[in-house]
Image (cartoon, rainbow, N blue to C red; front, side):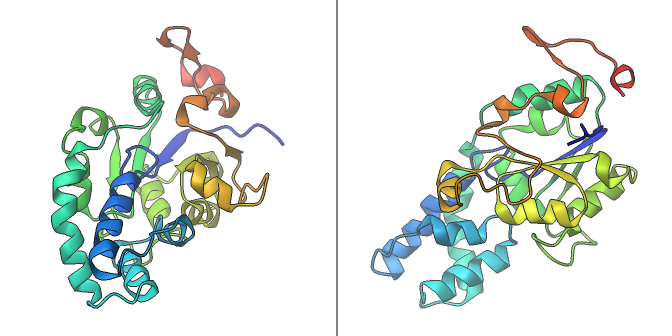
Amino acid sequence: MTTPLITHCIFDMDGLLLDTERVYTEVTQEILDKYANGARFTWDIKSKLMGRTGDESARIVVETYKLPMTVQEYLDITAKIQHEKFPLVRPLDGVERLIRHLHQHKIPIAVATSSTRSKFELKTSQNQDLFSLFDFIVCGDDDGIKYGKPSPDLFLLAQQRLGNPPSDQCLVFEDAVNGVQAALNAKMHVIWIPDENILNLSENGETHGATQVLKTMADFDPLTFKLPAFGPQGPETISHDNLA
């Protein structure tokens, strides 16, 4: 495969930048314990929710577990519990190093999350130093977003806000299969960094079309995509233009 020249990077958030998927699991299980006789929130169901909008995910949970409530009631209940837990989430392994590195080298970067703007602000409230480094934040309820992942809407809007660089010069980072498909639908390169439980649901060696599959973001090598190299003790000063 010819090494792609990447000039712009787009990042999912939940389970990719921040350890929020753990909170979603905990909150959903709390509700199942109370309203579904302790039915287990299994990874085969969870994998179907990842990358989708809140409304879509709620509908799947309510219908799958036959919960005695409407989708809106489910959303209201989860919102109360999430409000306490989300501000406590932290960046995942390798995230801060890469984001600070790209920002230092003036590589345009954006977040493209299915979360609503209010949920984004809640989740990032204790990590504002990190998220202030992004050039743009695209959320699931922004104008122009009609469909959630696996539709490409979020990534296409992020691309637009980044100045419409060529799709094949955009690199998406995703943890969800739906997100990988959304990036491919946007004609972009994509790094898949799945939770081990999601990986176990896939056939051995399955990439879902991703350019690379990594265990954590700490395993990402910028040089693979002609991005500035990490220095031995951290980012070193290398001009992106010199690597084109």
